[in-house]
Length: 439
Image (tube, rainbow, N blue to C red; front, side, top):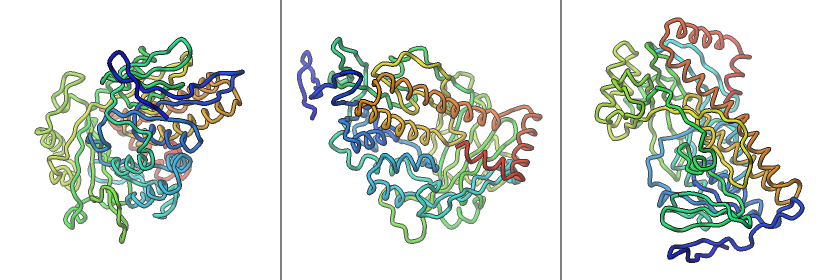
């Protein structure tokens, strides 16, 4: 149980029963998670189910404070992680709240000529490990359910402090603090925990900007939209270093989703920043000009693709600069560690960021369970965890960045080579399996 306590006129949250390291074994363990996103909440569930005391601190004042994007796709690996961490009832709600499962991943050129279509191995709506689109808001609600007493909102992390006798103190912008034995930075791509722990770690601006939007599904949209979009994620390789992504969120007949019931198509159009007349690395595209900026680049694209942009709700438009973490070597392990985008933030062009964060959550849960059992020294276990997430996390970063470069190559020769690769994969089940397994 955590209790409020004064700190120089402020508030201090004191962890009762600090862990004591005795012969490498941990008696009691108090874990603090900074960030209540997908990975942070999954970890919190997993630790709580394992009997490890945990509290999560979130800067938002409520779950729906920020626009969080429209939806993400949880793949088989991500679903196994969720199943491992969540109570059965929460996992069942995840299955019930998801949209129609994806049956294929498709690639086209900008004239909607097929390059590659990969059928997915699990396509039953009730299959636990099917690739399923789900609203980010819905998933966050499901992950939060049952953690109401351990997630503290309105806590913007400021810094951590290692005290002489062992406990870690997390300080927040409102003057409050929390104390525990381990601090986990699950606070996203702009992680303040990472900034203090690994001040030399970098994220680069890839030079690519993305504009995204959505349009509600109605009879006209269903008729005019490319059919492949309704089968699953669809990527379009355009000319001049431009690309487009589109996917549908629709629910099975008779479904009654509890969270975020809207059906829609979402799209993202990406290109080098100078295509939008942006010279600086941090300038954002004015949303009022976003649709016009995309349409201006699509004069020779398929009318069905231009239709998606033209019909989109103006209030749904967003823009952002695409960034990617720079791989780093292992660091000196301490009782502050990282999870998900806080370490290995990646471009969106493979759609595996959230799934990789969930993989981290399971691995860290298992690591800390071993520590509590006294199987190995805690720091040795954390060091092994960090080396593992560096290995597979930055492999995912590299794969995602490679995909981004492939989709946004300006050289006609490179673009012809990319199309040739996709067409070859379309004829090769072995290559198709590699495409799926890479996610």
